[in-house]
Length: 306
Image (cartoon, rainbow, N blue to C red; front, side, top):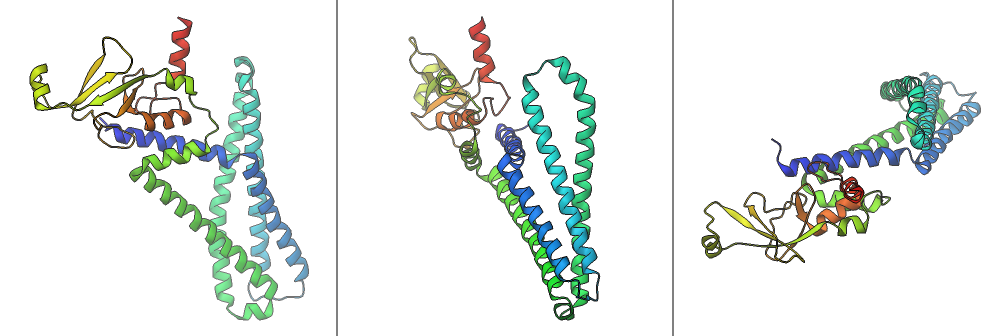
């Protein structure tokens, strides 16, 4: 059985990946991506036209033409995927019958686009190696024989290196944060969230407790011999509702800090409990329990219908 903290981190990583994918295909990012690649295509076309008199020792024109081809293919895949996502979002409220009719064709198109994008990514990696080899083989003579083609190739190669380093560094930072600083990830998600999680009313409807530690004298009075972490006492109830927590259960699985005497906790309908501040930030992002995926909004709707 997985430890609760591991389950929370896996849930945060999955949610972050979903957010990252949604953000990558948002309109501003797609427009920037398309314009950036089309700018590369335009610059390459202008340099190729202006460098007709240059005679490089290696086929730099052929390599630049291949680079332009991969940019255009990337633009095509991004635009098709963006339009598909917009169409799916508009059709989310359509009937089940209409969605089933288009399901087969939609899956085929998605598969084709994904294969094209994967193939283009592999092609770009191989093409970069070929370009680097040709530029290195040509040496400094290229800067004299074909200066425009040479420096354009250098710019394209350098940009690809910068982009790969940036993506790897970002992936490393996110991975370290998920493993070592989960509250940082929750704060990032909270900052970019579009309030798609639980509302303030949904969160305030959850039971609130106060935690207190149990000394040896309290254990003797209660007749408890097993290791006990403390007691959760529900706020605003008369008589007070109490839950005894074991030593292992007396910590927040989000921030990994043990419950301190007097701290306020929230308990979800699935009986999982966390620090108030930790779980409230989480629920603003995602209305499900980070441990068991229990949806508190659906739970509230079900109780209202009853």
